[in-house]
Image 1 (cartoon, rainbow, N blue to C red):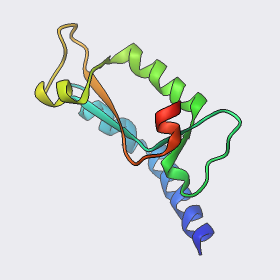
Image 2: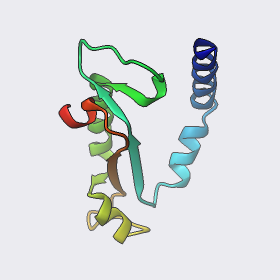
Image 3: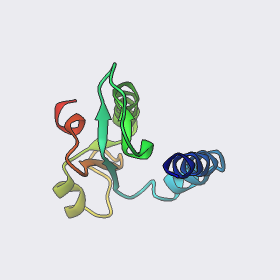
Length: 109
């Protein structure tokens, strides 16, 4: 039953990204503050266990951070919430990175 649920979830995630909905949401929110919520970062050579949507490979996370740094000013969550809506002094949108849950990868990677 779990594998069916995970398979369906994967298909729906893929369809959502392929539909362009994610890109449309990004364009719509360009002037606002972006708050990214991660659960777990999986170190290179390790395998994620459990719900696939909660785990992100370390190299993918690094790539996301590289792209984010090119387009946004990364700030603390407190600063992001205190400056809504907001672009920073540089004129770029702000982004805060958060981690939910207590996965080891979120603390060690």
